Image 1 (cartoon, rainbow, N blue to C red):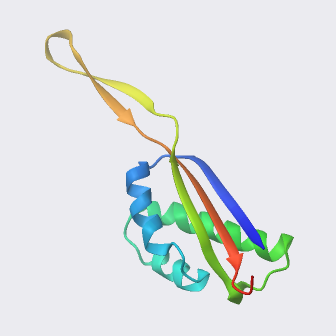
Image 2: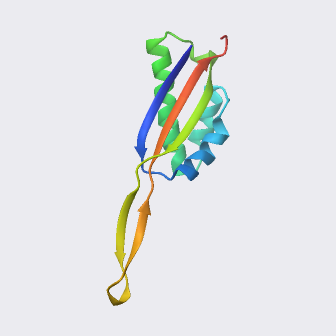
Length: 112
């Protein structure tokens, strides 16, 4: 059985979130939560919240045992981009690009 959780429009760059996603992909959930808890990256906080949500969904909706769960897939997609402008000399402006991410995490039962 597969259970998923999703975080849309996270104010993190997809490139930075993918670095964290690669660390936990395919791991048992207990080990993944431990890695994310002690990671210094900002993306690890968002990833841990999505993982804990997927674990709670599997436990409450599917009746799964937490000890048997592992991360089946983690997908990080590009979200909408916020564009801002910064004033520069002589009446010009530089563009500031604030990227967002969509994080989709799926956990599965190891018995399956």
